[in-house]
Length: 254
Image (cartoon, rainbow, N blue to C red):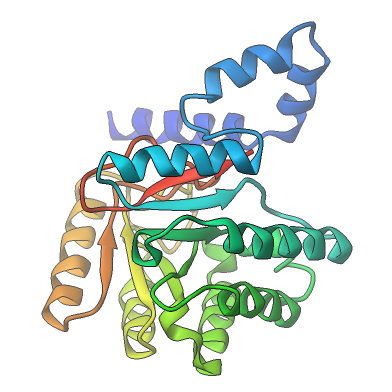
């Protein structure tokens, strides 16, 4: 049974991340419109104004929110600079209070794979654009990118911006206890999730083993008084399946 569940996860993940399928859907009559109808319950809107309206509505219902621009795996530095400009503009548009409305970003959307040092500079620029009390939460990506993501986050934290940063730790990864300790030592806020990526090595199986790892990490971070937020799983697009009182809900602009 566990093998069947694992296979289903792998198949679903490949379908969800397939650029070929995305292109095929867009070529079909009404394909893009149908895809948007299916996705719209998870996405705040296609424009900044729509995303901010959704964020304001969630705040009114007592939820904290995190606003994200959809995108990842950029390789073009000029495109990444345009994304940076959009994030800086978004940072200036977020509603109060600062402690309840954050930004979220995947570092591959800032061209991490092309030049990690420049991606760190872009992340620092976003962090500097935020007022005191507001953070930019760096999202989870596949395990092969963890070293580069950790290096970027810790680099930016060392620039005096730790209080403007958050990072995501995936409990299913065997490396995560050490990563959580490093982030806590740097005073970076930690978003603890179970993890959704399908990893060939270096990870606990999904299910009980990951559940136990999640609980152990959460307990350890609570014991040391580290700032954390706990979620059900990592999401490749940063969109939220629904807010929970007391925890940030992710609001994504398409």
